[in-house]
Image 1 (tube, rainbow, N blue to C red):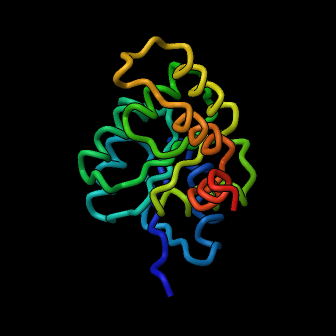
Image 2 (cartoon, rainbow, N blue to C red):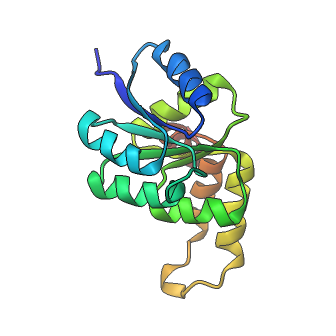
Amino acid sequence: MTEAVRVLVVDDHPVVREGLRAFLASRDGITVVGEAGDGEEAVTRARTTKPDVVLLDLVMPGGGGVAAIRALRAVDPRLKVLVLTSFAGDDQVLPAVRAGAVGYLLKDVEPAELERAVRAAARGESLLNPQVAALVLDAVAGSAPDPATALTPREREVLALLAEGLTNRLIARRLVGA
């Protein structure tokens, strides 16, 4: 039997934290190790609870989610930060991804999809809301990168499949035609 995924829930709304904690705690193989109401508290709790995944609201008092992502990754670079927020503008999404978020979901996500995203994040996989994935792809396609850092057609294909929410295993199967 594998160890349970250890999750820290971070949201500035107590009722949202409580709902997320209750839902996640009811899932087999997931343990909620703590809660926090802002980024600073999240960093403190991450140091003491050692989560695998931090489920993080992006817009919070006290510096907000992007600063918290950076601080959490500084505490432990192996820590997976999964953003769960109501905001999908490029002024939120791109900074969060650049700061090290492994996934970005909107709060209208179905419960089963949230559970899948938490488990995927713990495995080191990325999951993006389709609207967010389109924004990321547009940002990548619309920029004029240095040719040395541009994505190859194959990398774009992988990114598109990732944006569909496919796991690494399913992406590999699709790419090799198995």
